[in-house]
Length: 323
Length: 162
Image (cartoon, rainbow over all chains, first blue to last red):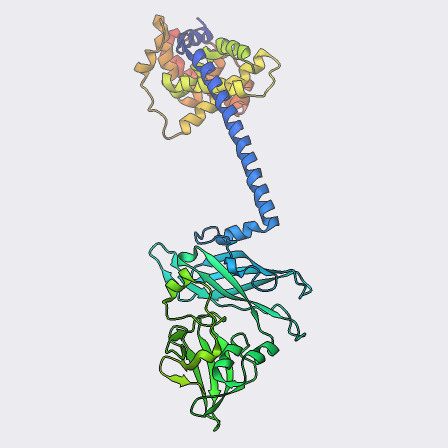
């Protein structure tokens, strides 16, 4: 035998298993099948990616993507259209819409759009955006959220530019919310014009000044006032703090200046019949001595008192009888 | 390649490819895996084969490559002994196991040229192309392999080629 024949003969008897062909065919078909599924999966993933990118692009274009990214993880975020019913139509066709209400950690943001059909302003609406801190301070809860209330936010917004004294000034005067900011109510008030305020409250009484200054800027000029003992004072500043405090400063005839802070919970007025009414953040007037929680639950709008009933102002550590 | 062509290729070439794979792997399981992989590659290949010889060359080339990949793999199965390898021979003649053992005992570089030359019938230049070696190198290795086989097989190995 030649070497070729020898080796061929030796290795020819080396046979693979009989079902090799079958297993190759079966594996080939299986691979083809899995390739098809893989290809389908790839196509599906590509389509899904395109969809996600498209939605993101549309979302980015429309602006809601940013908002969602900013607030979507915050379970406290919600939008509300809730308005306190008495607010609507309360002031000369002015209505308000709460557009956004966002609780972001201890901070609350809201945006209110005011609509007027009276034509008092050249624009039909104006957006008001305030960043405020709730009152009282929100309480951190174990789950990371905050208990916001009940509380209230006093805010104000002039709707005119002040150039025309005959224009009425409207304001968002009171924002209330209950526990965990689950509900937001809003009321509107109209700030009296200078003439209306003067007519209602003669000069020289501190209480009148307080009422008068509720909506005034801290930069307003001082007003004269007189206490019961005849001391004349000049109130030179008065403002509402974002946490509900009233800041005011005064000076006596000798030029001594002082500054005080009236805490909403510890100051107010005393009426003729001895009733003590506590100030709260509302600029509409006073609350009575009903605890705030009950008051807000039952009667969100503050009661407006008649100034003549008031005989004194009290603070945490002093009582100021009025003349 | 369609199913019918694949079946034909398997029938025509599986034995030769298995022999080549076996002389590299030294055990049936690895050799069968290699052959299966080679035919799967053929099934997926887009290559147009213009002759049966072209197809055979392609298969041998891929088989050698696949075997070398396998030998480089540190996790491959342990090589079986020749006693076990002989057991895979079906109905061997008396001299078959002797020649088989002698070839399998050659160093790999000689064994692969011997298999391609004597078993597959390729020339030295063709073997050089398959193994990426110079033709002269192949001829030298063939010469040394013949010497070793002659020494081992003595009168059974009747080869006058130097």
